[in-house]
Amino acid sequence: MHLFIEREFLINFEIEYDFVNYYTNSAVKNIFNKILTEYSYVTLYTDYDNLEEALDESRLINLFTNNNASVKFIEDFSIYFGEVEELPLRTLVFTENKKEVFNRIPSLGGIHFSYDDFEIELGQFRQRIEKKIDFSDISNFTWDEFSEVSKIPFRSIVISDPYILSDKSDQKLERNLIPMLKELMGTKEHKIELCIYSDEIQNSRERGRSEIEVLEKKRSFVSSKLAGKLESFSIVKSKVYRDQFEQHDRYCYMDYVIISAGKGFNVVPFKVGDTSIEIKSIFEKSSYKQLINHLKKLQEYNQKVYGREVIDTMLNYYPNKPIQNRLLS
Image (cartoon, rainbow, N blue to C red; front, side):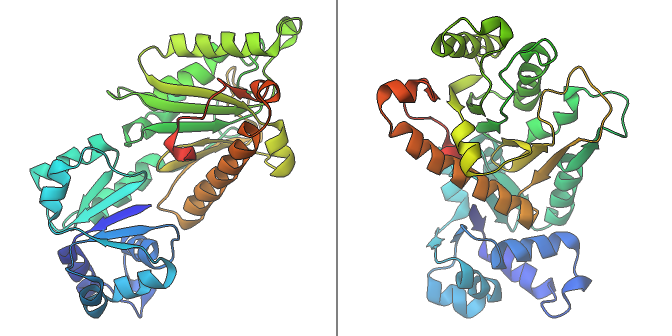
């Protein structure tokens, strides 16, 4: 995670925050405190002059450096965000005030909060996005359940589901994977990087054809249905990955969100049952850790698979070139 925090935001926060009586603070303020003091793999960017000054003035930065060593300094946030053309993956920006120049941040893939309303905005973000869809408690399911997720800035999607590409009569791509992706991508103007980890590529109608032929046909079909929306699209066979890292649920990973599906994302036609789909964000520590840990396992698997001989690799990795997906880099 890349955390940009203006000095004045930190000053205001620390004046109001009760470090002793933790539970007297608002839930959102406790989330912010936890991100700085308990999250790992975080790089902090701030407009203090240097680390000595930051440590001398800010209790939170002292606590941050207990878990993370990376602190970088930006002289002026307005100038920086007025000139930058690309933000690193998973960027949160906290500034003292709203300014027109900060309106660029979502289009660059980041999420911005100002001190005056960050409690409201972050709280509403979680209310809109985080939910559990219990299949024992609804009479029907439609993919517009994912409509709010499409409003979050993101540039990459990774799906891990062994049967999402099977295209069986009761698990059709046109009723599941494709409308799911269309709903997630929404009306985004930029293209999305997509990577799918799956096992069952061939269904009974395709048994006589080569696996490479079936892979290319399905990749082309999905690409055509998402015409103009994909920056890149890779498919990885993942049975060996599941042998090494036991995974019961199926997952969809994005920049700020992890979606789990107990029995997978082939849910149309809908059946009432004991499963669910759950959408969680990085503003819950356990979900953040889960997102980071799962993606690290997938990265390790990619390195092993792509290091094999070309003939073997072609059966596990398509197309036969390094994956272009910043969630996996």
